[in-house]
Length: 287
Image (cartoon, rainbow, N blue to C red; front, side, top):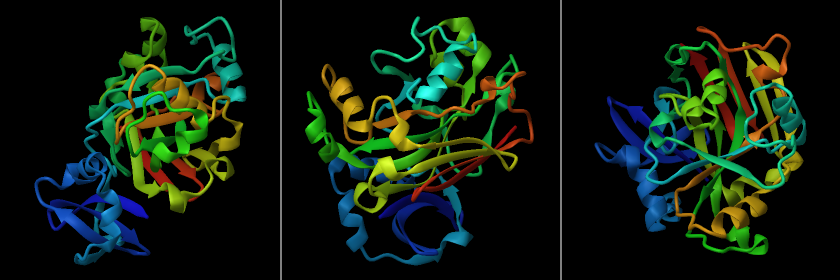
């Protein structure tokens, strides 16, 4: 199933996308957190059987499927081989001496940095003018995971969504850690929908493509991850509980702006499109 949050008739709503229409399962003041609350309660799987009015998807304004995450947004750095080399040689990598990490590099983005499809990413908030894109596959946790083995990790995956881990490269370098450089308001576009694991299929068969103003910048198979999804869940849950609704952005591929000479930073008016097989397309303009 594809779960969506959106605005229609001047108010927020959430529901299930069915072809070109969406069946509304929640609307009104609490709709922005309806999917997050249903994940936490374990009731999102009941939504496909609900009766609700239908509206055309073309007539709504999409929001991030989880516009106000109640849980953490974890991100994994340097998790594709080619990007690990690209980033390590860029001069911006303060994470380790090795280009390819020996263990997953994990950091967080603030929940309030989330925006939806077609929302403006406020690059003007970066005083250094070094805004970069990072198209990523993100995993949404469906049930608590603590000390989970790789062999059981898939049982804890609810579904998948596209994330663009927008970054100020100079702030990332100045601060020596990544929270400030990646946590600016609007720097976590997400969407267009949350796809259930059963519909999405095997992530290793997915292809990620990022375009800037129509030019392909990133193109990679998710099978190229250094640390795959079961490894990430096992590693993270070894010492902390992953909760329903937690989001894990699994890392970006080679082709980011700092990989070019000179770097191709984003500027006002640029449009970034991130697409992943079966998960749709996430489009955002830079402001």
